[in-house]
Image (cartoon, rainbow, N blue to C red; front, side):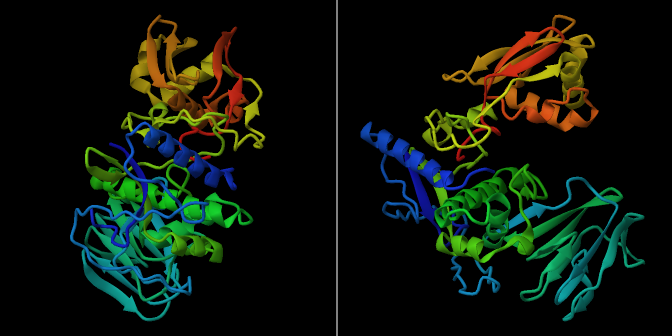
Length: 429
């Protein structure tokens, strides 16, 4: 029994290069849902606000008793987050020793839950640093571990170049810390849309993307976030998020028009959201989530649908890319040092161990001089090369746009040819 539906959940806790092609991507999912229905296995219709179809509203099953209703505001600047889940966004890619933080309105600073500074006025630029197992704030030492900066009313906290709604948690990591923005889910989505989409793109694209972005964040919070101090990062590792500074009238219109809507799936009577992903250009076939990770074998995540919607992309097809075998060894060693120790100090080949039904590599065997090999997901090899590109001699690493390609050994190089698409190609494009 299968359901791919939009959840219209006022009560959440009861439980790129995309353009208008995101809308087309959702239509592809609709078409697949209808196909499954014809096979007698679907029990509801998938629909989307803004698409030519009927809007389906399905209640999210309860996990918590949270009866607050989020009433959308007409003014996108005024946000009442009552009843909306909080998303924890890590703003620092790695721990820092100190940071300058300010606000444009009232604030409270708390150390271990005790207010040490409070004002109805704006907070000037203050340096927060870890020192001696405690906190040094504007040159004054405070004992304690947790540090929270709360904004008052509709004021925002400034960090780096951006203003952020909600509160900040400075999470200690030894004598350093990470900066995490705790923000309501709807404001988070408003701060994502204009960073992931171009301003001139269609309203329907914004609507579709709001649903995908909201579902992605909520899914991360109830999976990865359960054992971490944050749910998502503010970069391409999750979704690019620019805080209140990135919000636009267009992004808020899409958020308010789809408020509370998430993608869900039902199997054996159990309904839940799933990891909604997207990339710039799939290259002709939507990839299943299994090319990236061990994923549930549910129809919304299986991929395989033909896609011509991204054919206008300049990276729908791309030229062959050659990477030296020595650079592949360096990249694999940097990311997988333990496994790479068995390669005998170098790489002699990269062989495809498993492909999708349409020929896209899923698993690779990186073969070493020792004759032994390291098995990696194809996308993990690409990510390793991208992370290490500053130390590599091969200048073409940045042009390895996806792993939707063929691979062969050519002398001292590995050639990636017949390349298609940009990014992982999973989900919307």
